[in-house]
Image (tube, rainbow, N blue to C red; front, top):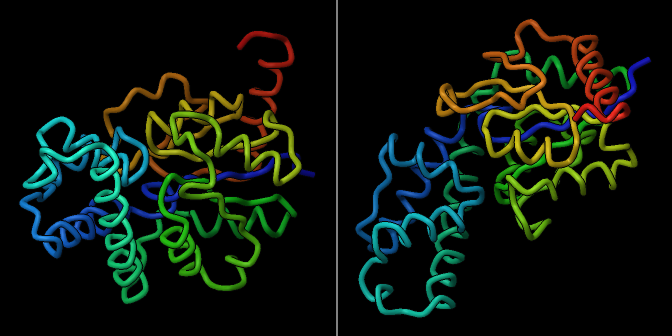
Length: 247
């Protein structure tokens, strides 16, 4: 029997959505608002080091300067702009997802099917908007989606690299943190998982090929050669480390 919960990040882990779905949706939201901001592929890649879309916009404009009237606005007005834009962006993202095919990464669906078959709890834990995550999970089909718990968006105040979303998932699923296996694709996600004392397997995504993954329990290009036995071994090894105070 397997003794762990399987926790996935969403964007870049379940599917390659950052570059080709999120980024154009942000740009369209900026355009609709008449803002002279456009994120190219390279710029957006750098901004992914900031967890959360609203936080990402704020971080960008804090660095390069706020556009137009917002240059002289106070923090509350600026944050209000970020919230409004993010709501627009989420609707645009949902439309793109609902009207197209989601590019799920290799063996993601098969791994989820294996976990469900063996009674392993499965959840998606993301800093992305909850509606956006639900749209992606729904594309997996109702049979899978109905068995996946979602923890996303502002469900916790402190976003990755804070461990809060993973700690919440463990609590709600009723599993010990050192009995969780997290699949992530970024350094900030890895730090969140490790902050929660969880085992973490990295599947590198388009944007994260060169990130620092030294804290990871394992690093792969994708899940192609991974099965439940491998995941259980990673969980057991991580559990032993914490049990004996090595980490």
